[in-house]
Length: 238
Image (cartoon, rainbow, N blue to C red):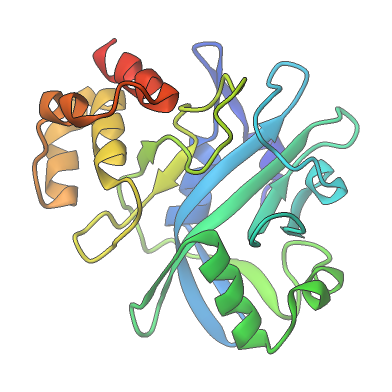
């Protein structure tokens, strides 16, 4: 797989992770032991001199690209890394959702994803990291898959500390498979953000979501006392 750090783009003076998201969500399979999964949802966390204060753990593993980082903080999660040690850039792609290729079962939420992986491998969390050297290991790997061409939906990340975070509502969350069967969080946010970011593809977005949402009514429903909601409203109304 290509060096993920080198796939980062700058668009309108902001970081654009769409090329990496396209590779992972539409052109890859996550292989865990003998079981195969589509990656359905990811969030990007990146720190550099020009992109600071962005809620990344800054683990030593996140200084490297194309490997894995098992979260040691919080309730647990698994990152695909895309850092650069020479440039002191930390990069982590949090896997928020997967879908079984054989059963179509969705596993949603980073903690549930990690628990499912550990169950398959019959391991404890502390036992997993030492076994993950490089992106393709004997127990977890990313393999090429060119059979999908799904629309990439974007929205703000979930569960971030709100204070002093200038990237609080940046569209660094990417999702495919936005059908009614996929019960991912903050679906309305993702819908409205994708409409705003891709106004020329409105009909495609509505078809993929299988329902229509009135953005103005959604904005009116948000609690404007919440600082994150204020930023979301400012984005959607700009």
